[in-house]
Length: 139
Image (tube, rainbow, N blue to C red; front, side):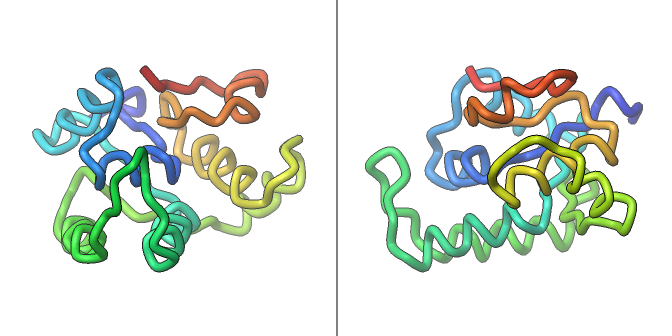
């Protein structure tokens, strides 16, 4: 797998995956990860955001996702070679301080994307999409 085969997952992408509501292009990338053709990097903050959303009982596109689906995803994180949970390094935290976004979690996601040399962030977040030199995919 080359560096161009890495994608960073945002919370909306993870939640839509759990709700079976991914847009076509992002769904294809997730399927390629399931087929071990690409690597999905899941920042720890994304997992935390998704867990918190489910614990609060919030719906995603009108669907209430059972907590068991996230538990199954945790099993995937433990066993998959192509879906990996990633924590920020000191270098990543230094980068967080330089990113022009108002929300800490978005800065952490962009930092993870940059440090991991991922091709794009899978997100519909317009503030992230508006950043120079950050490619996003959501369609």
